[in-house]
Amino acid sequence: MKVSIAIAGMFAALCLGSEAPAQAGAAAPILKTGSGQVQGVTLKSGVRAYLGIPYAAPPVRELRWREPQPVRRWTGVYHADRFGPQCTQPQRGLQTNQYSGAEVTSEDCLYLNVWSRPGLKKAPVIVYIYGGGFFIGASNMPLYGGEGVAERGAVFVNLNYRVGVLGFLSLPELSAESAHKASGDYAFLDQIAALKWVHDNIAAFGGDPNNVTIAGQSAGSMSVLALQASPLAKGLFQKAVGMSGAQIGPPDQPVLKPLPAGEAEGQKFEALMKVKSLDELRALPADRLVVPRVPGSPSIGPVMDGYVLPAQAGAIFAAGRQNDVPLMLGFAHDESFGGLGAIKDLADYRDKVQAKYGARSAEFLALYPATSDEEAKRQARDADRDATMVLSMSDWAKAQTKTGHAPVYSYLFNRPHSYAPGVRFTDMDPATAGAYHTSEVPYWLGSLSAFNQFRHTRDWTAADWAFSHAMTDSLIAFAKTGKPDTATMHWPRYEAQHPMLLELDQTAHAAPWPDQRKLDFFRTTPPVVLSGAVRD
View 1 (cartoon, rainbow, N blue to C red):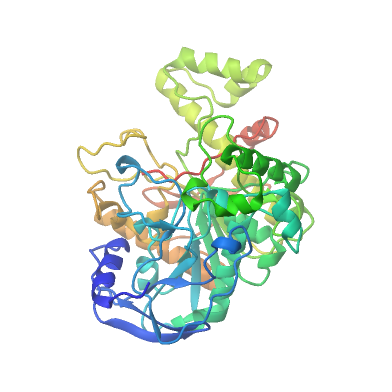
View 2 (view 1 turned 180 degrees about the horizontal axis):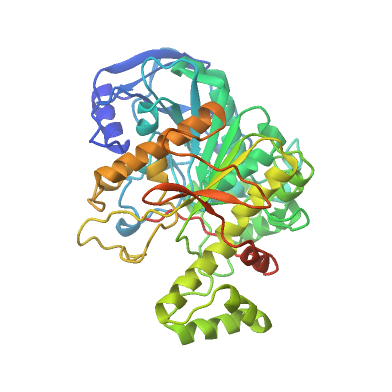
C-alpha cells in the first residue's frame, strides 16, 4: 500500500468521481490515527483524500470467517494515496463494469477512505455503505466517491466490507468456535469495526465523532437497517439514511434466516466445494469461494445470528430496542425486480395477473387498472416496485415511528438520467429506464461525473448539477441537525396515518406515499427476494 504520492495520487484522482477530472496536487497533511500516521493527497478541488486506510487486520488464513481484529500499529508514515483492493467477489465484464476502471480484488480488503475539506472542525460525518446484493461492491467505485460531499461541508467516509461467502458464511463449526456461538454476518461486523475506527479517529480529519450519519443504498441500505437494529452498533452513529433496501417486515414475520437455517445453507456450500472440514475450507483460495448464481445454489446472506442480530429487525423495532436515531429513507420511482415480468400487451398483463394472483386477480386489477398496452406495462412496473421496495421501506418507516422518538423523513426519487446520444446498455433501455435502482445515488453524493470518467454515457445539464448540489446540501443538513430542510428543500415529517414524502423530480415537492391499500395487498403475498445489484 506504500507507493509514491505522484503516481498513486493520479490513479486515486481518476476514481473519485468529481465534476472535472480530479488531479492530485500537493501531499495532504500528515495526520495521526490510533494505528499510526497517515498522509493523503490534495485534489484539484482542494479536498483532501486519505485513501486505503486499514481499519482492521487482514481477515486471511486463520482470521477468515472471524470477527475483524485490530490493526497492527505501524511506524513511519502510511501513504494513504490510493484505494485498497476490493473484497473478493465475482469479476464483472465490460458491459456491466463501465464506471470503475480496474478491479483489483483481494481477501485483504478491510480498508476505508476519508474525504475532508481544509478548515473543517467538528463537522458532521457521513459514513457511506455500498450496495451490490451482498455479493459485489466496493468503496473505490467512482459513484461512491466523497469529494462532492466534502466540498460542501461534511467529512465523508466509505469502506470495504466482506461480501458473498467470505462475508456471510454460517456453519455449525464456525458457531462452535465463536465465543458468541454465532456465525455469519461478518460483513456487518466489518461495518461496526469501521464505525469504531471513525469514532476513535475522525476528529483528526475535522469530523465530529459524536455526530456520525450512516447511509447506504440497496444492500448498503439493508446494512443501515441491520446496524440500527444491532445492539453492537449502539452509540456509533447518531443518524441513519436508507436508500432503496430494507430486510424488515411485521414483528412476527421471518425475513432473515435463523442461524440453524443459515448453517444448513453453509453445509450445502461445503458440499459444493467438496471439502470435509473447516480447515480444508479455510485452505481454499479465496477466489474459489463463490456461490454460483443459478437456481438451487446455496443461499448465503445475512442471518439472524443471535449476536449481531438477536432477533428479526421487525421484532427489535416493535420492542423499542432499535438504535433510536433520526431516519431518512426513500426509493426510486422505477425500481424493478422481476414481479410479473416483461409485459407485452394488455392481454398479457391480465393473463400474468391471473396466473400469479388467482382468486385475488380482480382485487389486484382494481388497484392497478389498465386499459391500454402502455398502461399495462406501467402498472406492472409500479406493482413490482410497490410489492418489493415500497413495502419494505414503508415497514421500516412505520416501525421507527411506532416505538421510536426520533423523526422519520422520506423521499421518492423520480428524476430520470440525461443519457448521451447513442448510448446502449445490455441490461436496460435508456428510453424506458426512468428513475431506476441506484439512480439517486450520484445526486445525493454529488458524483454525477462518475458516469463519464471511463465512458461518456450521461449528458448532465446545469439543472442536473444544481439539483444534485441541492440534494447533497439536504443530506448534509440532515447529518448536521437530524432535519434535512434547506432553503430549497422543505421536507414533510413522515406520519404513519397519513404518510407524506418529498418527491424529487424536476423540482422538490411534498407528495403522498403510494396507496397504502396496495401495500396492504402485498403484505399477504410471499415476499420477493431483492438482488440489490448495482445497475448502470
